Each structure stands twice: as structure tokens, then as C-alpha cells.
Amino acid sequence: MTDQASPPPALYLIAGLGNPGRRYQASRHNIGFLVLDRLAAISGLAFSKRKEDALVCQGEFAGRKVLLAKPQTYMNLSGRSVASLARYFAIPNAATLIVLDDMDLPLGRLRLRPSGSAGGHRGLESVLERSGTLEIPRLRVGIGRPPGRQAPASFVLEDFGSGAQPLLAETLERAEACIRRHLQAGIQAAMTEFNRDPV
Image (cartoon, rainbow, N blue to C red):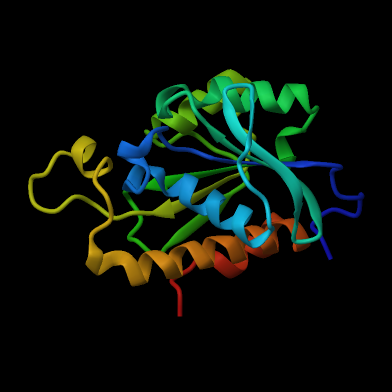
């Protein structure tokens, strides 16, 4: 049962935000890419095509047709790619989901929202500006705060430490489950289930 009585969109756009290149591949700022990699892997898909400045793959996830995208524009210009993909494939805002990192949430926490401001995240800010609306669903994935006096800018570009790997794996699994629930039952049902501390 979904939030709306109307049929689901013909195609969903799920875009993970991050920075391209091997240097940033496993960084905290790239957790959006890591979530998308997991979705592609369990769906038997591969990011083998490039479209509108993004690595993309198209297929089925959770019984829905999805376009998975990893913008290659660098984080602060993500909106250029996301907005272009949405226009090209005629995907409505409500059928778009942005997956991004959030320092204000500890690793393991998720926060799904249907709309709102960028909250200081430059990548999401770019998406909202280029799309001309705040009404775009987003899934914030916690990465935690930098320790001591470390600058946030350097913290987010570091890899997750070895000690964080088990919790990172659980977080990616939980993000996948949240997105699955969102596509199958609607965003309100997914928010109720996943916008709380994991058990």
C-alpha cells in the first residue's frame, strides 16, 4: 500500500551524491555513491553508461523501474547532472530521491524527508537550485562529526576507518532497506520505520 492511490511513476531517479575519482572513492562524503553501488550490485546492474554528466544504470529495484545515477561533476555541481537527467527522462520531483551524507547524524542513522532546505549541504543545495524547488525527497545518511578540532572539510574527504567498517556495512544495508520501503510503500511509511535510532 503506497501513500498515494495513484499508480507509481513509470521511472524513479535515485541519485547518490559524491565526488568522482579513485581518491574519493571510499570517503565519508561519498556515502551516497556507496549506497548506489549497493543498490546496483543487488539488482545485478553496473554503472557502465554515462548520461548527462553521470554514471548511470537502469533496471528494476524493489519491483519498480529505477534509474540509478552517480553525478561526475563533483559534489558542489551535482544539480547540473541531476536536473538534466530528470528533464531528459521526464521524471517528476516526487519520483526523485537524493542520497547524501550528513555530519549532523551519527554513522548508522538515516533521515528521510520529502522536501526542505539543503541544510548547508552544497551538493543538495546545487540540486535544489538547478531543479527550482525544495520539493525533492532526500535520504540523509549519517557520517558523524569530526573529532576534536579537525576541519569538517578534511574530515568528509577521509576514508572511513577500519574500526567503522562493520557499522558502515550495517548503515548501507539499512539505507537499502529504507529505499526499498520507500519505493514499495511510500515515503511516509519509510520515514516512520527508518527515521529513528536503529534497534
